[in-house]
Length: 358
Image 1 (cartoon, rainbow, N blue to C red):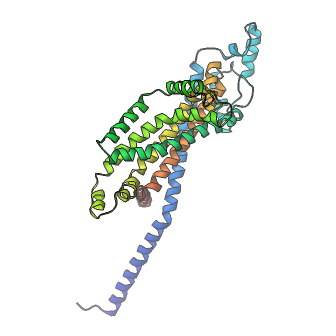
Image 2 (image 1 turned 90 degrees about the vertical axis):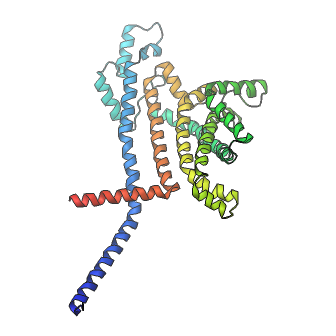
Image 3 (image 1 turned 30 degrees about the vertical axis):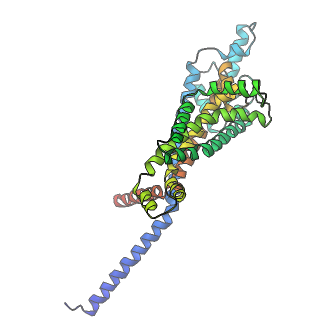
């Protein structure tokens, strides 16, 4: 069939239009990658709001149902009932529960975590003074744990069922079984009291950081080593690893370039989970070594029934854990481009569905 000149012209026009639309679609998808990632991060940030509100509700309920009168610990035993009632009125403890909760939430939204019953200082200010110590212990402990645990996990996977693997597995089992407070006490006994190498308690010197960091690192090394070993065993059995070996590549290249890169997701997850666990475990470690951090601040607040300090410390720790989760989720997409592609496709589908509805 012979086409006329008008048909050829219209056909070429349609092809040109399709090509233009295709180029525009590809350009839109490329330009939308950054927007999709930004939307994803913003969505994760918005998730913090209901989580933090739930934390605030829980800590306030904990304050309400916890037995004991904070006024009794603030006044001497000779205080009269009139003095106690006056102090309760000053602290707002005589207000209805809903009014107390509303005032507290309004203050938290404005960054006011209340005033300490004991020192009469702003809780936010006191936590800001102690937070650097807690973060220092957690970051150094996690850094050391990753340096030790990642090579051990890889070595155990490569040398599976060997003597080296058995020793590492036994070490991880011991590390996972030893309670943190017991290990801290043993470290004090061995290295501070018996050997006099380091101070038994925190005194501000560099040496006084060693025992708290070691005690909190030990359990993290065991857990991370076990996680890396498990994932490496799964990865090195994949077909692409066999193909790389069949091509004659060196074993070090196969392990570190091909295998290890595909275990980064569990490693990142382990870093995030480890940091969160260390922030929570700081209560025990800081209390044992008398480190002036948020953990000791919370422990002291519990014993003194200093509810504003207790609530503020828990809220700050919860907020830090939420931020760590966001960083870990973003790290997933950086370490594994497949997750970024999945995220982009999901966003594109939602956009097309929204346009179809409109």
